[in-house]
Image 1 (cartoon, rainbow, N blue to C red):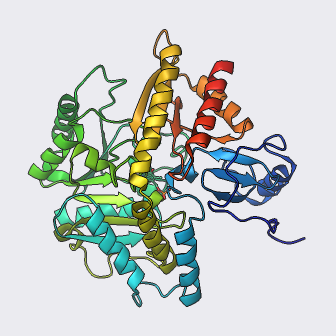
Image 2 (image 1 turned 30 degrees about the vertical axis):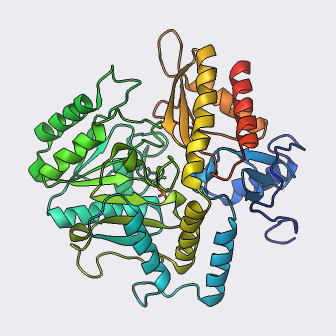
Image 3 (image 1 turned 135 degrees about the horizontal axis):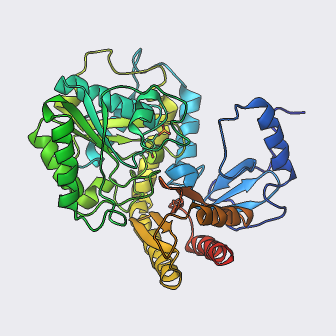
Length: 452
Ligand SMILES: *Cc1c(COP(=O)(O)O)cnc(C)c1O
């Protein structure tokens, strides 16, 4: 028995046949074999949305060991914006693998890291002087953004928002709002973290952006005090929390207040970043310039990389040796990031995200007109969601959401849910998906709604 049982034909990337193809039930027998091995080898707390045994992926599909080809509407949670095994990424990482794999940037530096920092400084909102530091995961970058903000302001408190998701490490669990499954049983959490109310147009009774911001700011001033507050951290569009797009003006009012009060404004663009929303960064839609911006997920075509980019005077505050890590800004991940950024730019993927958004919003709004269980359709670019509710009361309908997702999975569509109340279906297709596959995937979701 070979250790990794991958068929010789397992070649991913855009050359993979772009079709939904079911040859067994999902999961098929070979996937089930892997799941049995997994159950006796891997910690039970590591779960799956769609338990198949993946052997290849690319374009808009994921192929399993049984030969099923599934439509990918999740991009591995907004990571493979450029598609799986994107050609430029494969080429760049292969060349880097052959040159060298690791030195530790804080032992001896290399160009890839610096080039990624230059790119991020150039692409992120604002024309002020910037610096970047690289890390491995979104959570690690969020932690470092908070470290940097505290060091710079010499203050300690941090405000996060209702419905926030910032990661699974101790500090980021504390910043994350939702208890199950992210926090339950894992406390105690880090001190000096406070939660403020969000702007949630579908559920906050028609507060406009400025009013919702005033409510949050009043709470912050009364319960913490700006003189104790190092940073506000917020996702420009809440991701795991339910793809909540705040009312226009909400983010701008927060930035304005933060600037006036020596509070660092941190935009967590881990999920919204890199072309996903039809702009390089979602902050651009609201015309805001964050002091620090955290990126990860879509940055490197699937290789682990994250970054904090921001105002030079803030980023440069920490002492030498205060920021870093063994693998942070790995040469392989940096090569991947440069190739990924080039792919977004050269292949017009920011525009493509907008087109995908039009298809999604158009079709989902049409469904909503005929189906009162779809309470809301929202999002930007290729980051779109529907919120499912009881049509009578508006109460969140997590059971219906689960049924639709289960149906989609059985029919060969990778579909993700989210939301504090578990009643949101989110669409995060790779930006390399064809309209045909996208529309076919949406058709499966529509059928799932009909059958539920
Ligand atoms: C996924 C995510 C994180 C955490 O990133 P990891 O790489 O999983 O640590 C942080 N913030 C947001 C908004 C995310 O979507």
